[in-house]
Image (cartoon, rainbow, N blue to C red; front, top):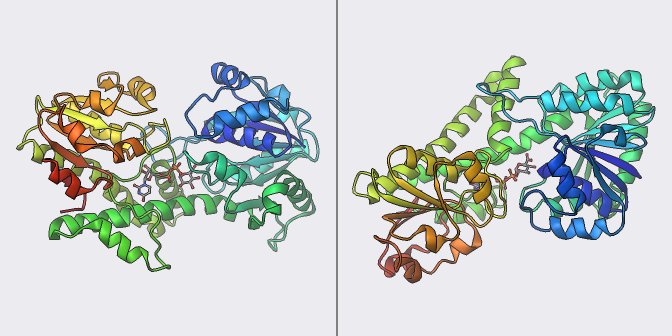
Length: 441
Ligand code: UGA
């Protein structure tokens, strides 16, 4: 099938390459000429495990092209909208200007029977508005939210745990004839994962849009729940990692996403819960989501607590102290620094008078662009030279496996704050380190 993918960021680039690998003929379109040039040369414009290999593999088939010209979307039967919906400056609401611009630019190139599949995370109600705008073209809008995780994006796109279609429905909630036709086209697009038994939830627009933000809100709540428990653990001398293990054995609770520490960041969870709260307010049901305010506060408190712990191990003041921050990305296996808890801690400490050196296996370039005043190092050992305290802020495998003796040889003082609860306190203490963590004694 001929497919266009509009927006080639973390979502769109992976989606375009994955659709080509499923056998479709794909054009990826982006306004950023630099990004398009890199993708066209078979290079991933950001770090995502498996994406370079996938680009090479599908590049050889000739089924994947990239362009800055929206006219190249003409002739495709399905158009995936994958542009970003960041938080609006100074507000909780989502900025829909990229979605609006993408749809406006696409309109003249649509043909009757085409499907426009929205993947961007949007406030509920957006799909209904976009569908009305598409009407004169005879194309059909489907809301097809995306659940991929950065770091696992290729795997999550090729083997999703579920597919959701929000279809146009009549007043009884039954898909219209054009909704059924659109569904059949999408079934063809996703024939391979559907054939592997991937569950499909076909529903209305509102539900499909809500599924995405509800899922991210649940995940954020789970993380903040365990981080709230970490605060209790700190007050009582309990260990939040053992607590999570113990409650996680209850299958109704589950151990995944119960890792306490510096909390959640990135381009999705923080802005999605805020946009969801803003939308609930507009709909007059803000009370339903007032708990998300608390989820957000618990999360932001962890960053402050991390700085406080570092201050404690520096005998009450970080002014003039050398601090090594291991990690800049919002999570391991990513170079994404959007709302990164690690960078937030590094920047806070720098602003409070510490001399901060940050390192990360992949995200240094993006981190430097955002915080040029911070100092950056190429490795943990280099960052830790002469450090008064080492902060583990992003749990990259190479930091989990650090040798406390080797690192201990280069620091000024053996003090570590484990912001992700991934180091073994006994090993580090046995090697002469002061070990502190969020929610562990
Ligand atoms: C998240 C969702 O997990 C995806 O399902 C969704 O598709 C995506 O947002 C999106 O909306 O596009 P992602 O932002 O890639 O994916 O990252 P996550 O793996 O969810 O991690 C988010 C943050 O939570 C990270 O900062 C991570 O360090 C933190 N986290 C995660 C914890 O603090 N504890 C945990 O137990 C798990």
